[in-house]
Structures are given as structure tokens and as C-alpha cells.
Length: 125
Image: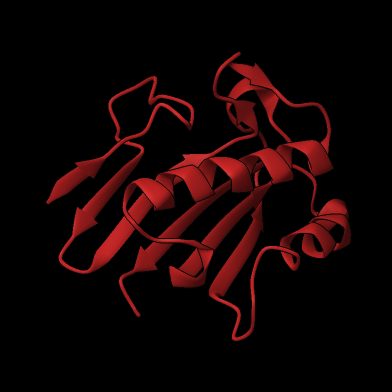
């Protein structure tokens, strides 16, 4: 097991790691739309989703991976009625075949974020 961390994504603020390598899999903790340098949560679903993907890309890069290596995505939406809006943005970040995915509505997220996303990636090249 190996910890992956980068200053180019929000630092872990609790008892967790940004990501953990185990064998050939990278488990990335849930990201919310925080801009890492300022620590400010972006405003709105679109801005938060785009920031999350920037953060995830930096974590993946620290592990010498990219979004094409993502196998599974877990999405936590504060309001499921925004699914179509989210899905439109999401589809801009992945190529087919798309990763496996689940999307669930949750009652609240840290910092009252609109969305949170975690991924599992693998060294699949």
C-alpha cells in the first residue's frame, strides 16, 4: 500500500489520504469542488464538477495515471434533479468505453457542496 498526495489538489483535512495505491489499483478519496490554492469551494454544480475533475486529474497525474485509467466513478449529488446537468459535464471528461459508475443522491456533503466524486483507477495501459 502506498499513499499518493499532491499539493495541486486539496489536502486531506481528516484521517484519510488523497489516494492509495494497492497492487495495480488507485483508490481516490471523494473530492468536492475546492480550488486547492485558495481552499475556496467553487459556486454551483458546473463549477464544482469541473474543479473536481481538475483535482482528480492532478491526483491521477501524481500516480502517473490519467482519466483514461479510471475504471469506476462514484458520484454523490445533493440534488438528483440536477443529474442531466451533471451528466453533460461528466461526458466531456471520459472517452468510451466509459468507466463503470454509480450516482446517488445524498442529503448533505462537506462544506454544503453540490457534488462529490471519487474514483478507482488502474494501471491498465
